[in-house]
Amino acid sequence: MFGLFSLIVALEGVVGNGLVLWNLGLHIKKGPFSVYLLHLAASDFLFLSCHVGFSVAQAALGIQDTLYFVLTFLWFVVGLWLLAAFSVERCLSDLFPACYQGCRPRHASAVLCALAWALSLPAVLLPANTCGLLRTSVRPLVCLCYHVASVAWLLLLAFVACVAGVVLFVWVACCSTCPRPRFYGIVLGMLLLLFFCGLPLVLYWSLRPLLNFLLPIFSPLAMLLACVNSSSKPLIYLTSGRKPGKRDPLRVVLRRALEEGTGQGTGIVLPMGRL
Picture 1 (cartoon, rainbow, N blue to C red):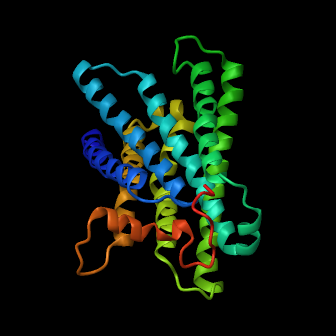
Picture 2: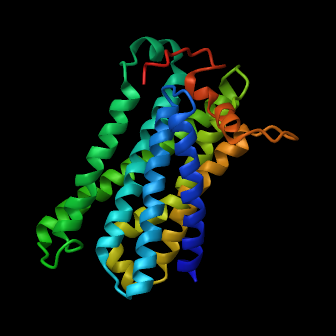
């Protein structure tokens, strides 16, 4: 049952993230924060596409292969890295606007996104390889070291993202004198999705053998929640950018929702080239 639901959710998410990629990548001028959202949409699109493809292959061929889970989880981890970097930078830009505007390196967003894609490979593939998920041989001691390091790093990323979101929420709600822009709803919405729908998949990666033995239903449930996490972000953008009673084109709605990503309306003016 969970498998069917996750497949339906994933298909909807593939369409939604594909539309975001098309419009944000080709038709909307990118600012320093919307670059993160472009890469997040790409990682979610790959995660959901792999899940759909591998689910169909497993149903058609009747083969259960751990390689499928590893490749799917890899794109989820890329999204976790991107969300952590995005949340921290958004938090710093609001708490210390003058310092942030003056000290932010040129092309910082692009460099951090590239690092997220590159560093996710060893964080997932090294423990998967030594623990027998990519091949039959297992090296217990090396597996334990790599797996503990991978889990600790993923939990740290999730913790950093959540703390940055809490700090940003408290600052906007209690301390900031500026009106609340739409962009903060996007940040906080994505962090709530991570906490309730993304962390179960990290937990499954951390305790996979134990959970498979004690609670076999946890794996499909965690994957369903992860699909909800990746599929709901386009809905957050549309909800934030839509005006009641108006039916604007998707491109206009996205531009309105992501306008804070270019520094409009916050007093933070970053050149569009400083990505």
